[in-house]
Image (cartoon, rainbow, N blue to C red; front, side, top):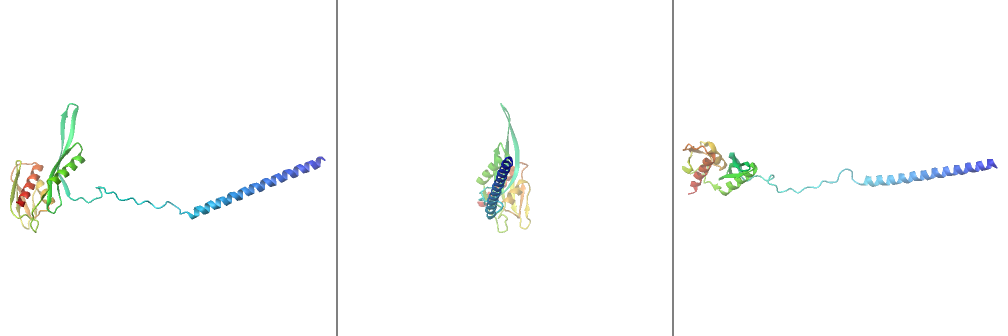
Amino acid sequence: MRRDKRDLTFNNMADENTQTKEASTATIETNNEMTTKRSGERGTAPRGRGPRRVRSKRSDSRDRIPEFSQKIIGIRRVTRVMAGGRRFSFSVSMVIGDKKGRVGVGIGKAGDTALAIEKAIRDAKKQMITVVRTKTNSIPHNVEAKYGSTVIEIRPAQGRGLVAGASVRTVLELGGVTDVTAKILSRSKNKTNIARAAVGALKKLED
């Protein structure tokens, strides 16, 4: 009897182990099927990143071609002594032109150099003139002008190129004027006044 009970118990344990193995085998097969399906789904999808978004180009001033050529002829720092201490600001003198007959001189003042340059460009655009030129980009006749204590004389000189110095040369270059000679008839060394006198002389060609 005892041996029969032992055999029965052993058979029951063997059946339970067999059922457990079958259940685990079924679980593994199910997991394999799910993994295969997932891998199949992933295989159909494109690998890697999707297409990149094309950003629209912003109309930024840095991307634009500047309308005028620019050149700084003078920059200085101004110090003011206030009750709370010293305050600094910057003054910028600039000449702008398209090298096709338009030129102007402007001054900008601000606490920051970049802002002072922007103001100088804005001021130069307001005071821009159109230069009367010949077919060879020279001037038709002699002109002379005065600004402050500065006196400038400009004469046509065919075939000699641009003969000028200081800020007068900058004004003539950005104005597209060649084959001329310019001379400063005063002792003034103020570059801003010299440039404005040169613009004043070129403006007389319109009369």
